[in-house]
Length: 170
Image (cartoon, one colour):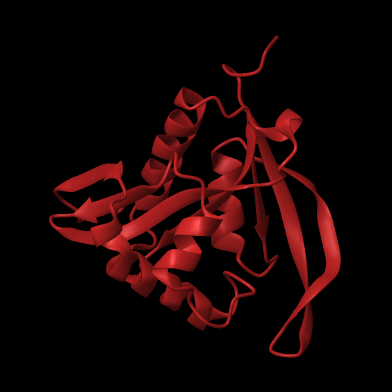
């Protein structure tokens, strides 16, 4: 691992972290390979969309360099332990092993909060994100062909899923 990174801390996201989280999200939007969104949400929109549990940031010193959070996949009670994972790193933090650490932290936090399944939808072109997920035990469930348009172009999404080995075993 090419570290070169010191003073890394992972912790729960606070509302005060939003400007840096938003900035990292904007970097993802600009790649056109991280999200179908073309504009970042407001704090209020983001706060309504993501579950209150498992909102995480990774800091280098005082600077937020990545974040992860969970979205509900359904309002049905039976799906209460299944969530969609969003994980983003600032572009200057890619390739340093930080994503692997953030993913491990998110998995531990999600299991501590009773989640038995995490899923992610990733553009097939985002090979780094797919590798990160597979390294963390996610498996490809399938490809959702031409599921949505981004900038007028139909895009596929690879659906990956990770089943906990400690939660939901009954």
